[in-house]
Length: 149
Image 1 (cartoon, one colour):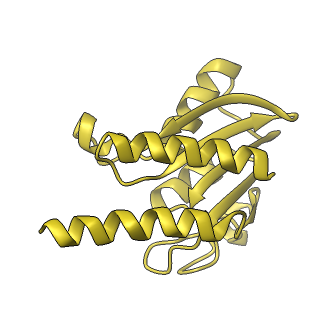
Image 2: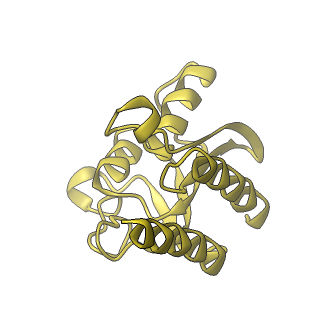
């Protein structure tokens, strides 16, 4: 698990280098890498270009199936409502995240969207993997950004 989260952290660092909020994601299937991505909202001028969505889209394309039941998504930040919704709609098997997002996190912090029985509760999730490293990267980014404002 930590190996995949470290790869997601590499993606988050790539996002940081591009001036994006440093969030990275990795999609695996049966212990193998499917794809990896990082935030591209600023570069693409696209509010939906979150690391998670980019990973889910590319993974579905590469696997030739929008159903990702046997896949695990590793992401450095707890998914927001949009991304958690996409996880449910793709029937993602599992999500593992690093830092919690108390403001917008929808895998237990603000709401448990994947666990909502009204939506079928298909996606299991687990938080806190390399939490401190993921949190520190985001915290540093926002402190630097506020310092420049």
